[in-house]
Image (cartoon, rainbow, N blue to C red; front, side, top):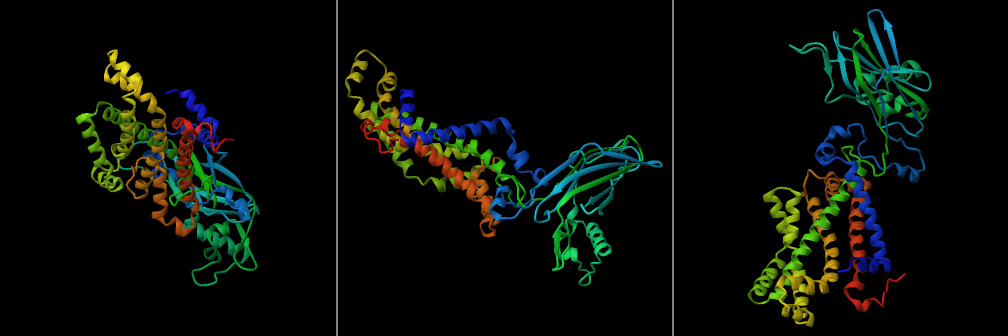
Length: 483
């Protein structure tokens, strides 16, 4: 088999050229994932809710705001590792962390979330307070809390929030709602419309924080520079705060949006690309090699070997693969290697039967007879004189097998039988349908993984179409796809 000739045949036609370009792009993206993503991305990141806690839930892609005709809130995460100022007041010191951001959207953020990491103190626990400075000059205190004190038997220095940060959703705090209501009453004279229900509670806390009361009811968005101010009051000068992080929740996020858990779908879809290619290429390569070897052996050796291989092929070809896959996964667990093993075990019969018929025709050729007369072994004759004539067809069939394996794995994952430690496109689809993404209108959770599965399958189909002239020489002078 001449690899250069096959590549030339592929590049000579439009389908093969398009398939090669798409395959190159997919391989480059897969290489990027292999270099940039950790090997345990599925278990350490994708399956960990804490990693995605700062992201908005079920947010559409950021580019959708271009179609909406209004400016929506883009998600922001602000961090500070050192105080902007230190205020002295007697025996106490107050470390002031400033987190400025600009609000230019036509709506209020969906939430405000604060996270504190690695708080160390030596004597008394620090007091943490958070306030929001608005463009109109008003400052509203949203949160005030003392860090957890020493535990029995614990020695100084005391460290808190090292492994997991203290996370507070400021827009859900009852004390923040009280502070906002007090601010509205004192500044704008907004009184409760009913017992226990103020204007802020009716319209939403973030709408009140990022707006001014409108005459028609509700709030008008107040655009401009905002500043979150975090004050940490300590007694010992050695007391420190490792990191302060503020998440300004957006209504849109990233290239592909987020799911109901706040996971970045772009990361999950990108990680699923090399997994899909691995499934397709590994399954097609192994099953093609197995089918070709059995077909050559059956057609060239003949006799009882031929009968045994053909009867085994007939039995395996008539076994329904999907119910067997479901049964095997149910018994052996949701492991990717088990899915690949079953796909390989039941993908070889068709190719074996076709290669056998080729070998039956080729074993009587003069070059085969001459090789046998010179004392060549059966293995050498099959490899050097029979296989090269069937190689082009075998390569084309290997390309055809790849999308079938990808679709089979996606179908299993969609049924909830995929490997949960490895995020795949089928699993993302299954999560979306199980959560009701279709009924809730979360199209960005369903359409992209489906399109990626189709594009990957079409890539291999285009390659197979481009290989047709190499499989059938009669097509070389009659290319309907010539460009």
